[in-house]
Length: 341
Image 1 (cartoon, one colour):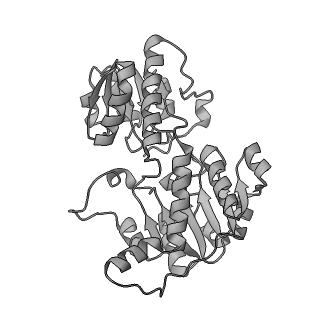
Image 2 (cartoon, one colour):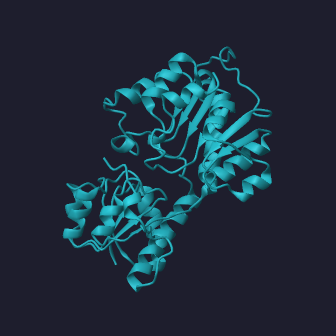
Protein backbone atom coordinates (compact mmCIF):
# COMPACT_ATOMS: atom_id res chain seq x y z
CA UNK A 1 0.00 0.00 0.00
CA UNK A 2 1.02 3.61 -0.44
CA UNK A 3 1.90 5.00 2.98
CA UNK A 4 2.55 8.65 3.89
CA UNK A 5 4.85 8.67 6.91
CA UNK A 6 4.82 11.95 8.86
CA UNK A 7 7.20 13.39 11.48
CA UNK A 8 10.02 11.27 10.13
CA UNK A 9 13.64 11.46 11.14
CA UNK A 10 16.56 9.55 9.68
CA UNK A 11 16.15 6.75 12.22
CA UNK A 12 12.45 6.30 11.38
CA UNK A 13 13.34 5.86 7.73
CA UNK A 14 16.15 3.42 8.50
CA UNK A 15 14.06 1.09 10.66
CA UNK A 16 10.90 1.28 8.56
CA UNK A 17 12.77 0.61 5.32
CA UNK A 18 14.58 -2.33 6.88
CA UNK A 19 11.33 -3.87 8.12
CA UNK A 20 9.60 -3.09 4.82
CA UNK A 21 11.86 -5.54 3.01
CA UNK A 22 9.36 -8.14 4.19
CA UNK A 23 6.12 -6.21 3.70
CA UNK A 24 6.80 -4.38 0.40
CA UNK A 25 4.69 -1.29 1.05
CA UNK A 26 5.32 1.96 -0.83
CA UNK A 27 6.62 4.34 1.83
CA UNK A 28 6.83 8.11 1.32
CA UNK A 29 8.61 9.98 4.13
CA UNK A 30 7.65 13.51 5.15
CA UNK A 31 9.52 15.49 7.81
CA UNK A 32 6.69 17.88 8.83
CA UNK A 33 4.26 17.10 11.60
CA UNK A 34 0.80 16.17 10.43
CA UNK A 35 -1.72 18.98 10.78
CA UNK A 36 -4.66 20.04 8.65
CA UNK A 37 -2.29 22.31 6.72
CA UNK A 38 0.26 19.57 5.99
CA UNK A 39 -2.35 16.89 5.28
CA UNK A 40 -2.24 17.88 1.60
CA UNK A 41 1.01 15.88 1.46
CA UNK A 42 -1.03 12.72 2.08
CA UNK A 43 -3.37 13.24 -0.89
CA UNK A 44 -4.11 9.91 -2.59
CA UNK A 45 -2.21 7.93 0.06
CA UNK A 46 -4.61 5.34 1.52
CA UNK A 47 -2.47 5.00 4.68
CA UNK A 48 -1.14 7.77 6.89
CA UNK A 49 1.51 6.78 9.45
CA UNK A 50 1.93 9.17 12.39
CA UNK A 51 3.78 9.66 15.66
CA UNK A 52 3.01 11.12 19.09
CA UNK A 53 3.15 14.83 18.24
CA UNK A 54 1.12 14.73 15.04
CA UNK A 55 -2.23 16.47 15.45
CA UNK A 56 -5.14 14.32 14.36
CA UNK A 57 -8.04 16.38 15.53
CA UNK A 58 -11.43 16.32 13.78
CA UNK A 59 -10.39 18.96 11.25
CA UNK A 60 -7.22 17.12 10.25
CA UNK A 61 -9.00 13.77 10.07
CA UNK A 62 -11.70 15.28 7.87
CA UNK A 63 -9.04 16.70 5.55
CA UNK A 64 -7.40 13.27 5.34
CA UNK A 65 -10.65 11.43 4.68
CA UNK A 66 -11.59 13.91 1.94
CA UNK A 67 -8.23 13.28 0.24
CA UNK A 68 -8.44 9.52 0.17
CA UNK A 69 -7.00 8.28 3.47
CA UNK A 70 -8.43 4.92 4.55
CA UNK A 71 -6.24 4.00 7.56
CA UNK A 72 -4.36 5.78 10.35
CA UNK A 73 -1.30 3.80 11.48
CA UNK A 74 0.16 5.12 14.72
CA UNK A 75 3.74 4.06 15.41
CA UNK A 76 3.30 4.45 19.16
CA UNK A 77 1.18 3.06 21.98
CA UNK A 78 -0.58 6.18 23.27
CA UNK A 79 -3.24 7.81 21.11
CA UNK A 80 -4.32 10.90 23.04
CA UNK A 81 -3.31 13.02 20.01
CA UNK A 82 -6.03 11.39 17.88
CA UNK A 83 -9.74 12.22 18.04
CA UNK A 84 -10.88 8.62 18.07
CA UNK A 85 -14.55 9.53 18.01
CA UNK A 86 -14.09 11.64 14.88
CA UNK A 87 -12.01 8.92 13.24
CA UNK A 88 -14.74 6.38 13.95
CA UNK A 89 -17.43 8.66 12.57
CA UNK A 90 -15.35 9.25 9.42
CA UNK A 91 -14.78 5.54 8.92
CA UNK A 92 -11.04 5.78 9.51
CA UNK A 93 -9.73 2.79 11.48
CA UNK A 94 -6.78 3.56 13.75
CA UNK A 95 -4.11 0.96 14.50
CA UNK A 96 -1.26 1.33 16.95
CA UNK A 97 1.75 -0.39 18.50
CA UNK A 98 0.44 -1.31 21.95
CA UNK A 99 3.72 -2.82 23.13
CA UNK A 100 7.17 -2.48 21.63
CA UNK A 101 9.83 -2.55 24.35
CA UNK A 102 8.51 -1.75 27.81
CA UNK A 103 12.03 -2.41 29.05
CA UNK A 104 13.32 0.56 27.09
CA UNK A 105 11.09 3.03 28.96
CA UNK A 106 11.38 1.26 32.31
CA UNK A 107 15.18 1.16 32.20
CA UNK A 108 15.32 4.80 31.14
CA UNK A 109 13.10 5.67 34.10
CA UNK A 110 15.66 4.13 36.43
CA UNK A 111 18.36 6.09 34.61
CA UNK A 112 16.61 9.39 35.31
CA UNK A 113 16.08 8.42 38.96
CA UNK A 114 19.78 7.63 39.42
CA UNK A 115 20.98 10.66 37.46
CA UNK A 116 18.80 13.00 39.52
CA UNK A 117 19.58 11.38 42.85
CA UNK A 118 23.35 11.18 42.42
CA UNK A 119 23.61 14.42 40.38
CA UNK A 120 25.37 12.56 37.55
CA UNK A 121 24.35 15.16 34.98
CA UNK A 122 25.86 17.95 37.10
CA UNK A 123 29.10 16.22 38.02
CA UNK A 124 29.73 15.37 34.35
CA UNK A 125 30.03 19.05 33.47
CA UNK A 126 31.98 19.86 36.64
CA UNK A 127 34.65 17.28 35.92
CA UNK A 128 34.98 18.41 32.31
CA UNK A 129 35.86 21.85 33.69
CA UNK A 130 38.37 20.44 36.17
CA UNK A 131 36.08 20.76 39.19
CA UNK A 132 36.28 17.57 41.25
CA UNK A 133 34.55 18.95 44.34
CA UNK A 134 31.76 16.85 45.86
CA UNK A 135 29.95 19.84 47.36
CA UNK A 136 26.26 19.81 46.44
CA UNK A 137 26.37 16.32 44.94
CA UNK A 138 25.11 14.23 47.87
CA UNK A 139 22.36 11.74 47.08
CA UNK A 140 20.50 9.04 48.99
CA UNK A 141 20.31 5.24 48.95
CA UNK A 142 17.39 3.89 46.96
CA UNK A 143 17.46 0.88 49.28
CA UNK A 144 14.85 1.28 51.97
CA UNK A 145 12.95 4.11 50.29
CA UNK A 146 9.29 3.94 49.36
CA UNK A 147 8.52 4.24 45.65
CA UNK A 148 5.10 4.84 44.15
CA UNK A 149 4.13 3.62 40.67
CA UNK A 150 1.07 5.24 39.10
CA UNK A 151 -0.08 2.82 36.43
CA UNK A 152 1.05 -0.82 36.51
CA UNK A 153 0.72 -1.87 32.90
CA UNK A 154 3.69 -3.41 31.11
CA UNK A 155 6.05 -0.47 31.72
CA UNK A 156 4.93 0.33 35.25
CA UNK A 157 5.19 -3.31 36.26
CA UNK A 158 8.79 -3.51 35.04
CA UNK A 159 9.65 -0.28 36.87
CA UNK A 160 8.16 -1.85 40.00
CA UNK A 161 10.39 -4.92 39.50
CA UNK A 162 13.49 -2.77 39.03
CA UNK A 163 12.83 -0.62 42.09
CA UNK A 164 11.97 -3.68 44.15
CA UNK A 165 15.34 -5.13 43.13
CA UNK A 166 16.96 -1.91 44.34
CA UNK A 167 15.50 -2.56 47.78
CA UNK A 168 12.59 -0.13 47.60
CA UNK A 169 9.23 -0.73 49.20
CA UNK A 170 6.85 -0.31 46.26
CA UNK A 171 3.33 1.10 46.41
CA UNK A 172 1.10 1.30 43.34
CA UNK A 173 -2.10 2.83 42.11
CA UNK A 174 -4.11 1.45 39.21
CA UNK A 175 -7.77 0.73 38.56
CA UNK A 176 -6.74 -2.80 37.63
CA UNK A 177 -4.26 -4.56 39.89
CA UNK A 178 -1.49 -6.42 38.07
CA UNK A 179 -1.04 -9.99 39.40
CA UNK A 180 2.68 -9.86 38.59
CA UNK A 181 3.04 -6.82 40.83
CA UNK A 182 1.00 -8.43 43.57
CA UNK A 183 3.23 -11.51 43.42
CA UNK A 184 6.23 -9.22 43.82
CA UNK A 185 4.76 -7.80 47.02
CA UNK A 186 3.67 -4.46 45.58
CA UNK A 187 1.01 -2.87 47.76
CA UNK A 188 -1.91 -1.23 45.96
CA UNK A 189 -3.20 1.88 47.68
CA UNK A 190 -5.35 4.90 46.87
CA UNK A 191 -3.78 7.65 44.78
CA UNK A 192 -3.90 9.99 47.77
CA UNK A 193 -2.07 7.47 49.95
CA UNK A 194 0.54 6.92 47.28
CA UNK A 195 1.22 10.65 46.99
CA UNK A 196 1.45 11.02 50.77
CA UNK A 197 3.64 8.01 51.58
CA UNK A 198 6.26 7.78 48.86
CA UNK A 199 9.75 9.21 48.45
CA UNK A 200 9.78 8.60 44.68
CA UNK A 201 6.76 8.84 42.38
CA UNK A 202 6.91 7.55 38.81
CA UNK A 203 4.05 8.04 36.34
CA UNK A 204 3.22 5.28 33.86
CA UNK A 205 -0.42 5.80 32.95
CA UNK A 206 -2.08 6.90 29.71
CA UNK A 207 -3.34 10.42 29.17
CA UNK A 208 -7.12 10.53 29.46
CA UNK A 209 -9.55 13.20 30.66
CA UNK A 210 -9.35 11.51 34.07
CA UNK A 211 -5.55 11.64 34.25
CA UNK A 212 -5.07 15.10 32.69
CA UNK A 213 -3.04 17.14 35.23
CA UNK A 214 -3.16 14.21 37.62
CA UNK A 215 -0.29 15.92 39.40
CA UNK A 216 -1.60 19.38 40.22
CA UNK A 217 -1.32 21.78 43.14
CA UNK A 218 -3.63 19.68 45.30
CA UNK A 219 -1.73 16.48 44.60
CA UNK A 220 1.65 18.13 45.24
CA UNK A 221 0.39 19.43 48.57
CA UNK A 222 -0.17 15.82 49.68
CA UNK A 223 3.37 14.74 48.86
CA UNK A 224 6.35 14.47 51.18
CA UNK A 225 8.65 17.45 51.26
CA UNK A 226 11.55 16.76 48.93
CA UNK A 227 9.73 14.11 46.89
CA UNK A 228 11.23 12.87 43.62
CA UNK A 229 8.72 13.06 40.75
CA UNK A 230 9.38 11.25 37.45
CA UNK A 231 7.32 11.31 34.25
CA UNK A 232 8.25 9.19 31.24
CA UNK A 233 4.64 8.71 30.13
CA UNK A 234 2.66 11.70 28.81
CA UNK A 235 3.49 15.34 29.48
CA UNK A 236 0.01 16.53 30.40
CA UNK A 237 -0.14 14.20 33.40
CA UNK A 238 1.69 17.00 35.24
CA UNK A 239 0.57 20.61 35.56
CA UNK A 240 3.96 22.18 34.85
CA UNK A 241 3.07 25.52 36.46
CA UNK A 242 2.06 23.72 39.66
CA UNK A 243 5.33 21.77 39.50
CA UNK A 244 7.30 25.03 39.34
CA UNK A 245 5.56 26.22 42.50
CA UNK A 246 6.36 22.87 44.12
CA UNK A 247 10.02 23.23 43.17
CA UNK A 248 10.22 26.77 44.52
CA UNK A 249 8.66 25.74 47.83
CA UNK A 250 10.91 22.70 48.16
CA UNK A 251 7.98 20.32 48.15
CA UNK A 252 9.37 18.76 44.99
CA UNK A 253 13.03 17.98 45.63
CA UNK A 254 13.74 16.32 42.28
CA UNK A 255 11.87 16.49 38.98
CA UNK A 256 12.68 14.24 36.03
CA UNK A 257 10.75 14.67 32.77
CA UNK A 258 11.12 12.90 29.45
CA UNK A 259 7.81 14.35 28.29
CA UNK A 260 6.25 17.80 28.48
CA UNK A 261 2.70 18.98 27.91
CA UNK A 262 3.60 21.52 25.21
CA UNK A 263 6.36 19.45 23.61
CA UNK A 264 4.70 19.27 20.19
CA UNK A 265 6.62 22.13 18.56
CA UNK A 266 9.82 21.55 20.54
CA UNK A 267 10.80 17.93 21.10
CA UNK A 268 12.49 15.95 18.31
CA UNK A 269 13.82 19.19 16.78
CA UNK A 270 17.20 20.94 16.95
CA UNK A 271 16.40 24.38 18.37
CA UNK A 272 19.92 25.13 19.59
CA UNK A 273 20.22 28.18 17.33
CA UNK A 274 16.82 29.61 18.20
CA UNK A 275 15.13 31.08 21.27
CA UNK A 276 12.58 28.65 22.65
CA UNK A 277 9.42 30.65 23.23
CA UNK A 278 7.92 28.39 25.90
CA UNK A 279 8.38 30.35 29.13
CA UNK A 280 7.28 27.49 31.38
CA UNK A 281 9.81 25.08 29.90
CA UNK A 282 12.53 27.69 30.08
CA UNK A 283 11.73 28.28 33.75
CA UNK A 284 11.90 24.56 34.49
CA UNK A 285 15.34 24.40 32.89
CA UNK A 286 16.69 26.95 35.37
CA UNK A 287 16.30 24.62 38.38
CA UNK A 288 19.41 22.63 39.35
CA UNK A 289 17.26 19.75 40.60
CA UNK A 290 15.33 19.32 37.34
CA UNK A 291 16.39 16.93 34.57
CA UNK A 292 14.53 17.16 31.25
CA UNK A 293 15.15 14.99 28.22
CA UNK A 294 13.47 15.12 24.81
CA UNK A 295 11.07 12.16 24.79
CA UNK A 296 13.78 9.56 24.27
CA UNK A 297 12.82 6.87 26.79
CA UNK A 298 11.56 4.65 23.96
CA UNK A 299 14.65 5.24 21.82
CA UNK A 300 16.46 1.91 21.60
CA UNK A 301 17.28 -0.30 18.62
CA UNK A 302 15.04 -3.01 20.04
CA UNK A 303 12.07 -0.67 20.42
CA UNK A 304 12.42 0.94 16.99
CA UNK A 305 12.71 -2.47 15.35
CA UNK A 306 9.55 -3.64 17.08
CA UNK A 307 7.68 -0.41 16.27
CA UNK A 308 8.55 -0.65 12.57
CA UNK A 309 7.63 -4.32 12.29
CA UNK A 310 4.32 -3.97 14.14
CA UNK A 311 3.33 -0.82 12.24
CA UNK A 312 3.90 -2.44 8.85
CA UNK A 313 2.20 -5.66 9.95
CA UNK A 314 -0.84 -3.61 11.00
CA UNK A 315 -0.96 -2.04 7.54
CA UNK A 316 -0.66 -5.46 5.88
CA UNK A 317 -3.56 -6.77 7.99
CA UNK A 318 -5.69 -3.89 6.76
CA UNK A 319 -4.62 -4.43 3.16
CA UNK A 320 -5.53 -8.11 3.25
CA UNK A 321 -8.82 -7.53 5.07
CA UNK A 322 -7.74 -9.38 8.20
CA UNK A 323 -8.96 -8.24 11.62
CA UNK A 324 -6.09 -6.31 13.18
CA UNK A 325 -5.56 -7.06 16.89
CA UNK A 326 -4.01 -3.61 17.32
CA UNK A 327 -6.97 -1.60 16.04
CA UNK A 328 -8.34 0.87 18.57
CA UNK A 329 -11.97 0.04 19.22
CA UNK A 330 -14.56 2.54 20.40
CA UNK A 331 -17.48 0.65 21.84
CA UNK A 332 -19.00 3.58 23.69
CA UNK A 333 -17.92 6.77 21.85
CA UNK A 334 -19.73 9.02 24.29
CA UNK A 335 -17.41 7.83 27.06
CA UNK A 336 -14.23 8.47 25.12
CA UNK A 337 -12.53 11.84 25.03
CA UNK A 338 -9.28 12.83 23.41
CA UNK A 339 -7.70 15.94 24.89
CA UNK A 340 -6.99 17.07 21.33
CA UNK A 341 -6.65 20.83 21.42
